[in-house]
Length: 314
Image (cartoon, rainbow, N blue to C red; front, side, top):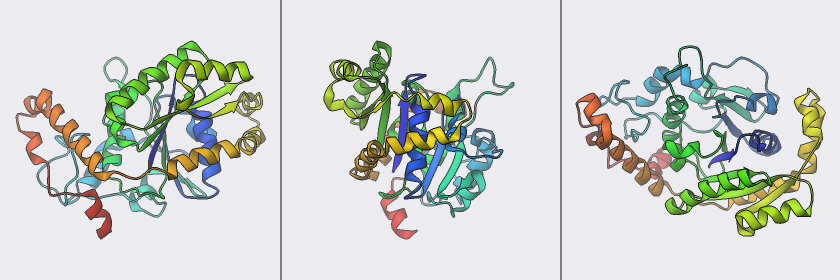
């Protein structure tokens, strides 16, 4: 399953996603991805080591995923290009060749990061150009029901601007008990309901019953999967006290269990995934990619391809 943690900047989504990943990794393998331009997930996970950002290895990634395809080149291999029977795929396990090459591994966690801006990007590149590398990876990843691929996503509703919006089987939106945080969630929820994308709120930094009632009134009690109390010790973790994170995880293990139960209740819908991807690709081609490349890039869609059939053969 592909899972995203989102939230308004400062809501605590990196803390919550990192803590959940650490808790979950005691039970299962996890592919953890920092997909935020503020790259802090690695520190939250307690993983050391230098890692080349996947956004800086885009041509290497395209070479790998194209497999035996000769209908596209790296130049016109778009982030929305659906896979074909000749593509190469990724299994979300620590022993998969792609995962081993592009991640740092610690225990059951395989960590990758999209990366942030560098000097060459300033003034002309938006973060969506970076996220294209993750779109390529996700559209060629054969994750199943008991697989956990978890992204600490960009702040706010920025996921709406890429095909990543359709990629996640479930989204968890971390919401503080404030007007602004609730407003950002409601904006995202509206689009999720229109597109039938699953999203649940996780209340965070809840200090008392008044905070909880505020959230229930603002975003609706049914939207809130669970809530996490304000924890002063997180400040200590951010100041370098690693034991504080362990204490935070222990205090909230029942909350994390609820999140896992919700993930495990979701059924994978590969047909819907492929249909959304094909439609996004065709719309992008019609809007401007065909004119830019002077060729009909929508015509390369392999309609005989099936994610389900591909998984069965692996």
